[in-house]
Image (tube, rainbow, N blue to C red; front, side):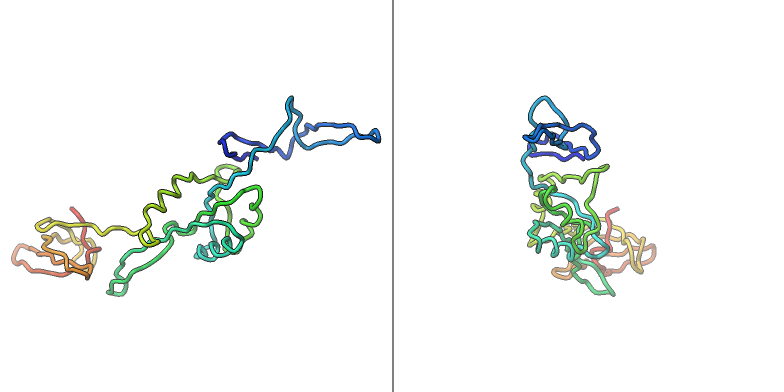
Length: 211
């Protein structure tokens, strides 16, 4: 099994090695070491705390996060906050940015078993046979996007006079002219033009798409 050490050089432990180092004891017997025989003295690299992607059981991201935190493990489960029209009402919905996944930072040699058996955890994401180390820069980049603890998807901006298309709802597929956004309501006024008539309609911003 291979892990990256602090200097990013691979460190390999092969549990199936057949090579052993032999040392004499005072009573004439010998002691065997499980380390492969080398020309120089083997030294384990310093243990390093790394970020790993954790696969969680369905809808148990928060459960896994709380369990790992109680074990003293640093976690990061980015949440997405977005406005959605639910039952014809605008509501703010909060959900995991990566459903079914979260991140945890720990020393793999020390906490592997504690993590994989933690409540809510399904497995540690792997590349091949080894747990995949997540780059610190990726985690920091995600954290830099947080606004009050959440990742927020900005609402598409439209300019007055712009031709837009209504993407869903009763007027799905129709083209209209964007007039203005209604302050604080996540809705906009569109000028709907057809062959024989024109009319102003108010629709949800999320129903409007660029052509």
